[in-house]
Structures are given as C-alpha cells and as structure tokens.
Image (cartoon, rainbow, N blue to C red; front, side, top):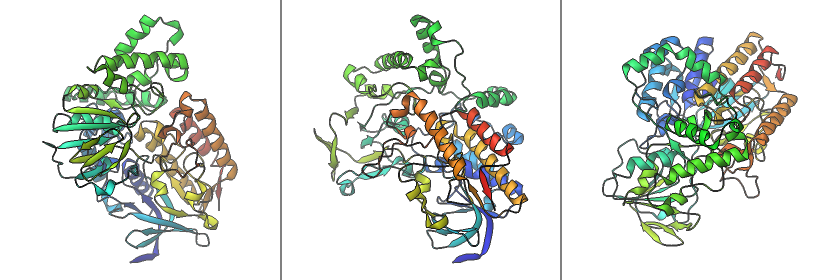
Length: 538
C-alpha cells in the first residue's frame, strides 16, 4: 500500500515520552501529522522494559510532564520512584486525556527515509512496505532504544530460555526452581538482581564491569504527601531548572576544601540516606570535578559497599577500580549488595574468567561450565545514536546519515544535522538528553522544535537546514565541554563508547552535551531570539 499522494506536513517517529509530548504540541499547532511507533502501543522505554524492579531513578514528580497544570492536579504518584507498570499507566493517561491516540500508528517500524530535493519532501518507508510522504520528520527515538547483545559463540545453541531485558516477555516469566544466569551489572542488572534473587533456585551473576551504586531509598507517597508535592510543584520545577542535570538536587554551596574529613564523612552519611541521586548531585561540586575529592568520595562509597557484603572477596569484586564515583552513569539500587549475601547467589568476575561461549545447557567461562535454565542479557544499549542508526536515512545529494556519523557525530544544537533538511531531532545526539532527567530535556527539545516549525510555516518556507557554521560551532562547544570533564576518557556510553563499533573506530565520541541544562537551554533560547540565524530557510 502506498500513500504517496497524501503528503503530511509532519511525521513523528516514536511514541515514548518525547513522541507523546511532540504529538500534543503539533496538535495544538494545528498541522496535519502522523506519528509512527514500532511497538504495539505507546510508552517507548516504559512499554518495552518490563523486567522485575524496573522503575524511575528520577523522583516521580520531576519525571512527569509539567506542561499542563491540569495534568499535575489530576495525577497521583504512588511512589517516590515510580515502577514501570505505573509509568506506562501515566503515559496512557496523558495520551487519552489529550486525545492523542488518533495520531499514532502502532506496529509501524520505519525502515528508511529518502529526501526528495525537488519536492522538499521526505519519503518514509515502513517495514510493511507502506510509503508515506511528509514535509518534516521529527525523530523522538529516545537515548536507549537499541539493545546491545554481545556476540557470544554458540548463543543460538542454548536450549533454555534467553532474552535481553529490553525484550522481557509481557507474560510472567517462571522463576521458581530455575537456575538463572544474568550477564551485566549496569543500571538494569542492579535493578533486577535483588528482585529475583529470592525467587530462583540459583542466580549466577556474570559481571563484566563493577559499577558504583548507592541506595535509591524509595518509599510510598501518601495522599497527604502527594497534596504537599502538588502545592510545591512550582518550587520543585524551579529547582530542576537551576540544576545542571534537571533533577531536584542542587550542589552543596560550601567548598570541599573548607571542610574537614570528619565533616565530609558526616555529610556523606546524610546524603547516602537521602533519596535518589543526592550523593552525586547534592554533594560538593569538587567531588565531580577534582580528582582528589573524587578519590576520597570513591573510598567512602567503597567502604559502604564493604559494610553491606559479608564476603570480603566478593565485596572487593563489586568495587570499581577503573573509574571514580559518578564517572559513569550511576545506577541506584535497593538492597542490591545484600543479594550477594544469599547462599543461592554467585558472582562471576568476567575480568578474571571471561566467557568462552554459550552451550546447549548454559554458559562456559575459561574456568568452568555453569548449568542454566534461563539466561538474561542485561547488556545495555547502543546509546544516543542507536535509534537513528537503525533507520536508513538518505538526505540531500544521496548522503546517508550512518556514513556521515561513521567517525563522529555532528549536529546543530542536537536538533538538526546538515545535509538532512527538514529532519528535526528531539533529544537527539549532542543534546542534554543523555546527561539529564530525560523529560526535562525532552520538554525543552519539543518546545524548541515546535517553535522552529511554527516560524518556518509562518514564513511559508518549505526547506530548512542547519548552516555549516552553526554545526561547526556546536561541535566545538560539545567537544570543549566533554573534554573538560574528568570522565572524558572513561569508556562508557556517556563518552560515546559503542561495543558494536567497527574495528579501528574511536572508543570516544561526542554524543552528549555536558555543559548542563541551564547553559543548553540558553543556547536554544539565543538561537530563537536571533531568529534562527544558523538555520537556512528556503
């Protein structure tokens, strides 16, 4: 089926947190648009990630949308860090409240996009073979939407059940009496492991790299507390707006060097008991920027881990030695370290005994074979660029986006990339989307993209493209901010590390903007105030 004779003014790709808000804004703008979603329903990451323990690690009331006062008044958060089922209910509530489902087409995976220079239109081909045309395409693909599964030898030979956490089945997964292996101890693995440790016969954790982690300290939200939160929404969002990461935590004003080691430890004890990212974000600024301060904080967190794990050798394996606290994405946990005190839980350090391959009955390391009934791949994602790289996008002069970005990502403000006219990115590469409270980033991005679109339509322009000067300026700014950060040479998805990269490719890319949310927001505002001087209109 072809729809070439009916061009839309815009097509959105994605129906997650970003796509839902973008649909609301386009509906308000009154343009003719559709939104395609590969999944069977809306929700994005909260539709796909159904694994046990999956929940916000941002405070719920800062993760929700803030664009509608009526929405804020009507929705009750049940926990300080809301679980996946409630998050999905919330997004459905938003879509239904604003009658957005009419714009979405589910089960529609975008396979390719082809720019027609003569018509100033994009042709969008779905996996089904259907073709749609639109003047503008707005990508809302999220930062963690393309899973990464290591290419283990023999993986297809396993006779048991195996899946990536992103593909956790909708139906309950039987755990009782089973021998389960989980590969990965990042944010996802740290959520799953304590949830299932007491439900399985045996749990073998294959740790690729230990991660720093601190308590989430989640609690239910009573009706009285929810009313108090409601009364303080303006204050809460004002704090988020000032925060470098868009969270409700602001750094300590007192300097690290003005305190004694005893005062610092007392303060860190207090932060350790607070909710969420307090130890990371409400700390002395120097703990994130100064090597000595970070070493002292890392030693403190290491001691807290040792105090929670009974076996000293296991505790040491759970403490990172190749990066300091906060130098990679910080997972938050609920009795994660205590899971290793259980008799049915074993920790396998893959740096000591790497995996040789998957067999018909389990996983073989260089040391021994582990019999398993179920293998869980908690091995992460091709972050930031993964969603876009999954689509063949051919822009002006036949340029393919994956070719342009083969060696280094390049954008203007994380919203456009030269050579691909009329393609706008919400929470795209080189925005703050991967380094902040995600909805805070997407609301900023959606509102800027919508304002640019409004400006374009008002001027009756049919083609917009980032200038080369604008893109060069932004690439330099992104690189400068990242290179200033202590973690800039730590291999992680924060610094653009992609385990699937071609041989010889750099481990480090400039995929995130690390200047902070306030500075990023100012760049966007300045661009608008200057009437988008670095965007070419025709």
